[in-house]
Amino acid sequence: MLSLLKSQLTEKRYNHSVSTAEMAVSLAKRYGVSPAKAQIAGLLHDCARAIPTGNLLQAAQQRGLDILPIEKKQPILLHAVLGAIIAKEQYQVTDEDILSAIAYHTVGAAKMSDLDKVIYLSDLLEPTRQPPVFEKLRAMISTASLNELIVAAFNQSIIHIIDKGQLIHPQTILARNNILSSEN
Image (cartoon, rainbow, N blue to C red; front, side, top):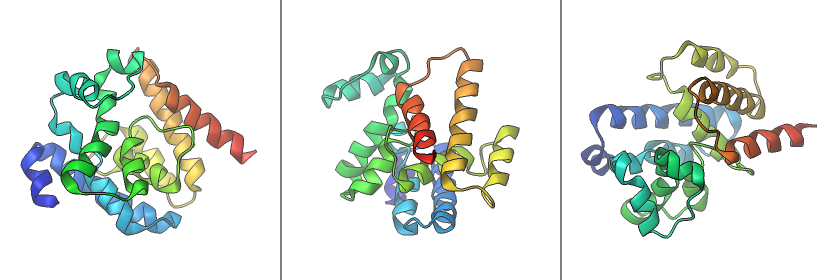
């Protein structure tokens, strides 16, 4: 798995994937999730980044995926769901929990498992990610519940997207709202 991934990704993306897997194992242990599943999902979460960004829309269309208008405008968002397909096709991953975590690692989903949340967070918080806001989120790991941490991460992601003047994926809003609604 490692050698195939290394052969397909840039060195920077490969290192990010390995670091994400390491963070995923750490968060999985902290939040009672399978470390083995977290490691595989973390490692493969960006396997579709081997597809050039300009080709993601075509790759999604060729696979018959439903493509939302926001994904047509921002095809990079498609790498997550394509990653789940590639993980199954090229890496023989059949575990639906792992495939779900890969598919939801970028924008979230209305109903996320704890593994889905761990991979979303691991991708965002692994140590090679540098913005100072991530340090605040990393500091929360030792005291926050998984839901508290992911809501804080969604909040920061939404603020970042707004600051960049980009569209917010509806699944991100649904994911955040669903978690907040279930907490009350």
